[in-house]
Length: 254
Image (cartoon, rainbow, N blue to C red; front, side, top):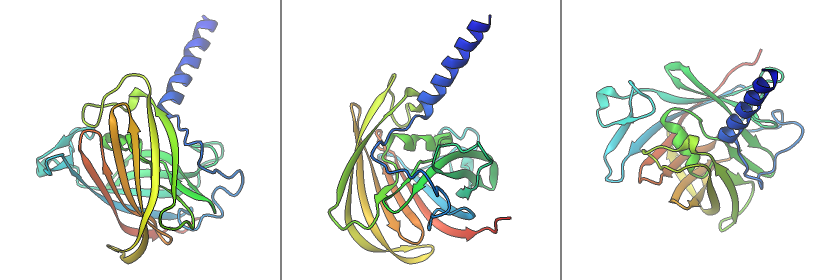
């Protein structure tokens, strides 16, 4: 019985690791000062985003308030909420991703809907793991927000990741077992972007994730003050998801 119990436990751990595994082997992750030297995603900062979703025909869709894993065209049934990123100090030994700053995702005012993941910020690169729940786990199939620091227009880099079929869905792409994503990123421009926080100087990063199913894309706009202020995703099924930063607040840490 004990052998069977431990075997099931090990298989369960492997299964969880497969769902949450992240490679992105070329991302530089520091060994020390994981939180203390961040200038953007620093502990005590909260970032609020609105989101807009359209299908391949340009029809506006909404995350259903009844089942937050699906979409609806009826605005009256929509989950009316903003996405909130809280940069927090995790409890000792409870960091979700080793050597990554902790992000708590929630939806205001539905703060009981939460998810935890990580962000990497250092002098070489900034990389954000997207939310892992509800409809928005679809973003696992697209390039992650990622930039190499202090690079000029035309700079290009690449990476890879394998994701399990836990992330699969008829809404944004179906597959069995693993799906290998080949990423390409290019800094294509520097723009003055009008946002809810004012006009911000941003680097525009155009990225793609190619797989046996096709291609997803992410166009992101990066501000040295506020990080990724706009993210424009296009998924395998033609769905387009746009996240726009609307507010940043500082919370006093006790």
